[in-house]
Amino acid sequence: MQHLVGHAQALLRREMPFVLAGDYNVCPTDEDVYDPVAWRDDALCRIETRSRFRALVNLGLTDAYRAFHREPHRYTFWDYQAGRWNRDEGLRIDHLLLSPHAADRVAACDIDKSPRGKDRASDHTPIWSTTPRSGASSQSETGFIAAGRRRRARGTRFCRFGHPRNRSPSCRY
Image 1 (cartoon, rainbow, N blue to C red):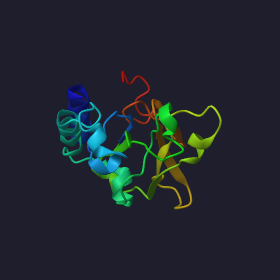
Image 2: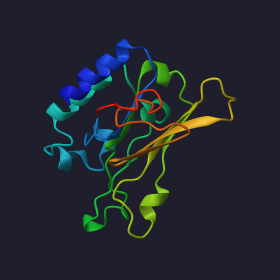
Image 3: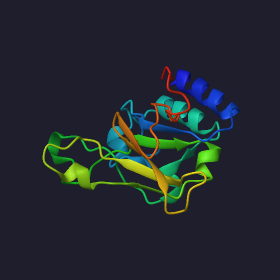
Image 4: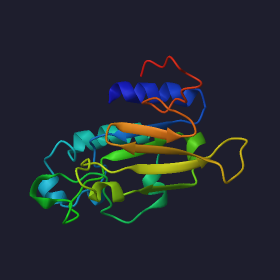
């Protein structure tokens, strides 16, 4: 996580829009866990884990989902064990963290639960956000999607740390 903080600081100095998207394996607050008491001592919810994640966010990044949704207990992950999906006992561990320049442009963000309900589905489900393309009409959008370790973008391809591939094709991350 410390390497990611350093990388985010370097990106912020460049004052360009970026998205850090993926499975962080962190539940930032008790509202992101179906049973906070039972998960209190798990690595996903420990104070040390949460404080490292907050250090990243406190650089000036925006949690895209929380910028649009304040309601508790919305999840991106449900364990296969003990019928967690059927009881909606999940965790919000997949996050889209937006730079200030990207946060100013974000138009929407949500969690798409529909793929998780399919046969042989991943235990993660996509979280997505959209931003208008620069210089394009408001109907033309670029989307950022994170689901577990899989990331894909509509319109522009992005590397693991949100760099547009057309700007940094040799990104080492």
